[in-house]
Amino acid sequence: MSNDKKVYLGDSVYATYDGVVLELTTENGLYTDPSNVIVMEPEVVDALFLLITTTDSILTEALLGEHDNNQEAGFPDYKEP
Image (cartoon, rainbow, N blue to C red; front, side, top):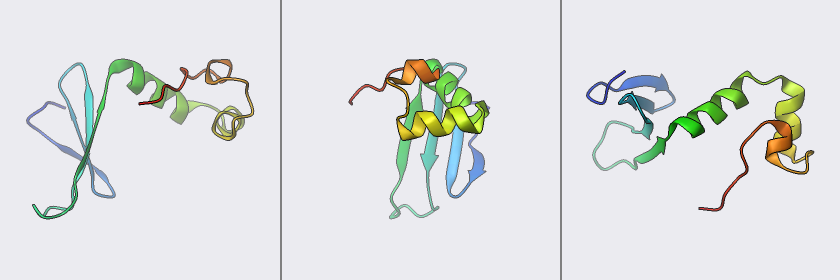
């Protein structure tokens, strides 16, 4: 994947990758439609991959806050934007 080629993932979500950051965008195809961009640095991509590939029980515990912190569940600490 390169910055000049968008890959359609489904549900109006596209991805580009420049070798460092993964950029996700939402588009419906019309210039008047809302569009969103999420730029994911390697650490965030790693955390997302961990989230996707983790067993259901750990994922559920992490999402429901059943650990004292995210690192205990294997995820980086959440930081307020």
